[in-house]
Image (cartoon, rainbow, N blue to C red; front, side, top):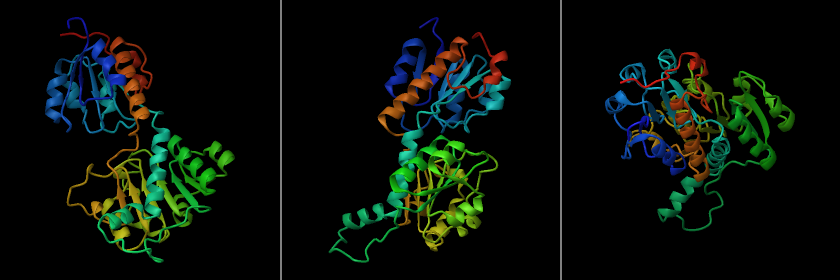
Amino acid sequence: MAGKPKVFVTRRLPAAGLDRICQQCETEVWPEQMPPPYDLIRQKVADCDGLVSLLTDRIDAALMEAAPRLKVVSNYAVGFNNIDVAAATARGIAVGNTPGVLTDATADMAFCLLIAAARRLVESVHYAQAGQWKTWEPLGHLGQDLAGRTLGVVGMGRIGYALARRCRFGWDMQVLYHDTYRHEKAETELGARSVDLDTLLRQADFVSVHTDLNETTRGLFNAERFEKMKPTAVFVNTARGPIVIEKDLIAALKNGVIFAAGLDVTDPEPPEPSSELLRLPNLIVAPHIASATVGTRNAMAEICANNLLAGLSGQPLPAWVNPEVASKRRTSASG
């Protein structure tokens, strides 16, 4: 409809946010399950005022250069590694994300993977489904205890703290953490101790990753780091796939360097169907579902819509990745 801003949405989102976008904008939604190809996104946004993207969509300088009317990119995710934020800022384009609302759901998922891997749950379920369960076995499917053990949190942000709180008060675990910054609340309320990474790896029974993906964390968990962990240790990653060198994790699991692992993220994502990641009995791989609860995904959609509509109207974004763009934002849609 004439007069409404034009928007391209790269995937169907929950109605909690998408309905508002469709009501207030001239909206095209990509209807397929698989992400739209890069060239198609570039073609679609050529005359758009706004773009709603997912982590699977590469939003780079060339794409933005081809969209002279684009005023806002609203990413349906907490992370925004898929967007060239510097290029957006240089072109006066506001960028938004959906932080905060994923905390509890992701912490729950991290613990879900932790306990399932420690207790060999998926492996034993497959055993029963395959008809191999013949009798109660005194030595069958022995896992690791949780109560009173030590949790190591790499990246003590909101999600890391939420997981640590669950483990401290639910399972009486001791908490170690490694982060660039001190987390006084974790130290005061949970008795958490800030330690260097080597100490954490040596002492923790469970290592859970909650750090951002950046140049210092890319490939952080490699063969050397897995070698420093206990042979009974369980490794969990719900952060970003490239933080782990997967061939090194596979080797550590196959060779008994560590006991088990649980991943909600991989690199690439999804893994190739032939990948050993999908065949190791002591590794659980979930299809990036940490935020997959009705309440969380609805809340993400609402924030995503709020960011988009604020960006289109020249207002401050509720969750603004690049607020430094404020003084040079695109204020009108020409063309």
